[in-house]
Image 1 (cartoon, rainbow, N blue to C red):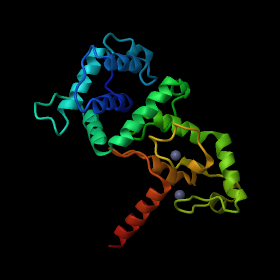
Image 2 (cartoon, rainbow, N blue to C red):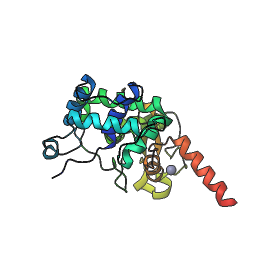
Image 3 (cartoon, rainbow, N blue to C red):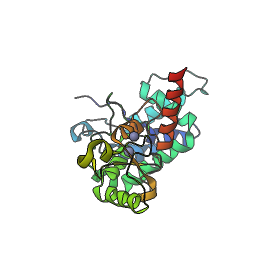
Length: 249
Ligand SMILES: [Zn+2]
Ligand SMILES: [Zn+2]
């Protein structure tokens, strides 16, 4: 068994450390490196066998990762260390949307510290069909998906929609399960977090944070692409509008 490659969650935490240090590497004996090493060894991402491997996310390896971040950044004048594509994508993510990525790191740290992220079971769609996970990390997706699947929360959202006199249908494409499937579709809809991944989870989910969507639109809201892994219903509607426009030309 070999030490597993760094996942997005781990890279988010390491990246945040480097950014907060002014894009400079940190050393093995630095307190932040020691703390991150300990944190990474506790994360519920890799198997306990993998985590027990000697050297797994040791302070040395964490320090080397911060060097990768520093030397592969566009502003670094010296020679870049060799690192994998996920690290390069993470450097891009922190460069292009630093505030959001720092927020994702904070949400991760908070969820780990409270023990919440350790308690949530893996969810079926936390990794997409190509095996990649969101740039913000798998654990935040896991938490958001677990909340969206919460039957109580879903029932409350459906009641809110019906009480307001609206019809239960997809907020993106208007699909109406009852109309399409008759009895079988009655009362069916999926709920999706309107707030982005890096924010959702830092607080209790409110009904207004949720949108009603059909199964297809919901999948498209969650489909990961490099650097982008979460869409709001409004963003997806815009995507549909654009693609319809392109089809006309
Ligand atoms: Zn839809
Ligand atoms: Zn969703």
